Image (cartoon, rainbow, N blue to C red; front, side, top):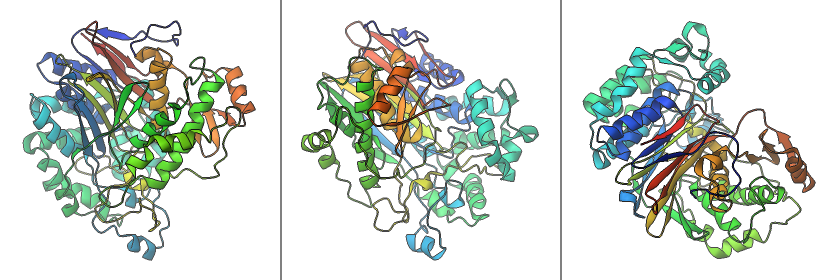
Length: 532
């Protein structure tokens, strides 16, 4: 996974570091992570500080009104910790209520898509358990950018412009996030003083500063004003928690994910299917390789949509789904020269909006960290006093009472955001993740197999062009060669060219034999990797 073969996708060089490294989707966040490490902080300190900066400077992607999931390797070992920082539906969110209101689907723009934000509780708990620096130091850079202003980066500007019409429909969001009545352009300076005030409250009171008091009341008032079900008791009762990670083996490596309700199981199932093929292709961008990837994704996503739900409320057959027998049965359905037609629509709508980051410190603690408000600017609602953009994660729920992912009181929805980690011989080998909502499992598998099967370094693996299967169509980035595009079409795939990039990602590989880190950051975002 440290590279060395001839093929290298065009782009930036991999970052090589000796002591520590960080990779995020924005240079301000990466720099903040490095500053925390140089100040004596741990990888977790650096990750939380970077996530807080991203919550300010990438408001379309993430924020304190969203959720997070985290994997951590302690001291570089294969002791992997997992934290579920997902919020829950309101305790009044009973499926009968939606049926009585004649609501057949929770639309992403609906007020009922807003769930309790889980990120802040996770940050506070993880900083206490695995950090050395206090919240005051960790959140200061984010407060600086919120109160003193930050220049808008190019990809951030593009995302902002795309979602401006949604923001414009809601006065508080428009007032705070459409300065002068329009989306800011690249290089414009934006200030978010109300958000800075909310961050200061978290410094002073910890998680209670968010889930109780005036900030919590501000969130609830925003939701109730449009008939939403969220109440202050829902926020006050919120607790995230450590969970047992799940894993599979691929080419002799252990690949780790957070368990359901996250969709990490989907990536593991894809890897299990691909492991049935001794060789997945002659190169990263060949029709054979991408055909297998697409077919494995079709089968794995089908299982995701059928089974993944909140394990506190439904039985998710993780062991059965990840069994070798199940992988063999699914792989046997794949034909080398013909695309499967499964005739089932995807449960989730596509969306590109998440931030993923990873940090490895001098003690080889490795953190794989993902934070999101789901759609661009989440629900497009901002609180009036605290400037918090509220997520619309509730749109992931089904309203079918027979489905395990049906909405219910204090229930967590199936979740798209998934951090990943790889271990080998008792040590962490790779911390990585790919953004892009529904695309994330396929994106993780694409990046990982680029490294494992084709020997690409982390940067080249992220640079490599991508495809994504969505409701019977296969979208191909512009970097997919025309001959490959036509080769996939010849196999029966309904191909289309994408006019925007697929997701984004970060990765840090640990080369234990040489004592170095190799870090990459996806050029599809504004970010970078740094190390020392």
